[in-house]
Amino acid sequence: MDKIVIEGGGRLEGAVVISGAKNAVLPIMAATLLTAGQNEIDGVPRVRDVITMLRLLNDLGARTESFERGHIVLDTSGVNNYEAPYELVSTMRASCLVLGPLLARLGRAKVSLPGGCAIGARPLDLHIRGLEAMGAEIRLEQGYIYGSVKQLKGTRYYFDTVTVTGTANLMMAAALAEGETVLENAAKEPEVVFLADVLNQAGAKIEGQGTDTLVIQGVPSLKPIDCRIFPDRIETGTYMIAAAITRGDVEIQNCVPLHVEPLTLKLRQAGIIVDNNGTSLHVNGDSPFEGVNITTQPYPGFATDLQAQFMALMTLAKGQSIIFETVFENRFMHAAELNRMGADITVQGHTAVVSGVGQLSGAQLMATDLRASASLVLAALAATGESTISRVYHIDRGYLDMEEKLSRLGAKIFRTK
Image 1: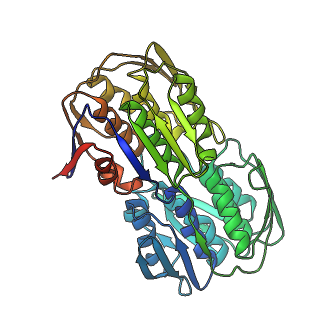
Image 2: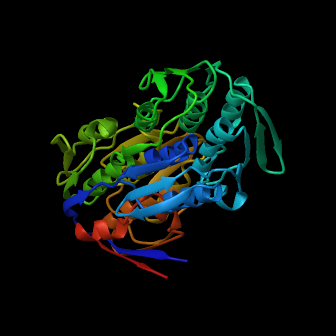
């Protein structure tokens, strides 16, 4: 199993180019199941989750024509299998996104209950109830979701809690349903808006994206998808924090500053300089910074996927900061690892109190999930001495060439078996 070794204490300087958004491309790949033809997706990061989704689509009958230089050509004409097996779905929760498209296109689906990061239950009950409201018959049996329907029907459905994958799943199903579907309390994340826009370009009729109410008029069929993935906002935020925690000076290129505005505001509140240059951000962390409080929320609030990285930053801030995690119930597992480096973090329920310390020390560390992995990398960059991070396959799920990008910024980081 690979490990990442980091000699900390250096200052990051230079420029880093942000890759395409993993959380945007996965729903788009699932949406190709709604089409029957040659789909083309550009700007795709070759991370492990993308490879897993590609394998799953191939398993369902799609054919990968090519995947070179971030460009996927995927022929979905031959999709005829409705089973998404445990071996693939168990490693990535986004695999559940094939449930709605399979029911819409084939009228049947057998999808394993998903896995992914151990950050909370994240049940699929909202997906299932929504599909049942559209006329599908669904049962759970031996770890699989079995679904069948002759024709999905439009419905009005209210999400009890905001869910990104739930909104995407029902939106895709509704695109080929008969009649009108209204989804209330829908997610407003950029990835959901992008999915709606791409589906509309393929012939869907979706209105309201970016608001909490989506109105979808079902159509008989969609033409193949042709799109380019926008830059990853979580990768953007991770490198912004990397610059700040190392007291560095970094230009983050090829990003969408609006997508990380909550983080930008909190960094500025802490005393870190962030300049917005339109399609890039310049972060200078040369000055001491103060502790600030954050509360994670669905977009446009502070992203839960940046909470762990921000906690790492706050371990070195002046004073105290309080972090409220409202999205996932089990997303403070990185706190114990940060404390092993000398941090002062107290966790109680959904709240973490972080008292800033003067210095972190290198340590043997273990990653528990994708974003926790990133937080440990950031902390190790700022720590004195050497850190070794194990279970880094989590990083490979969502960050493209992280060691190479950090090395180009001056980090002393390498991977070992």
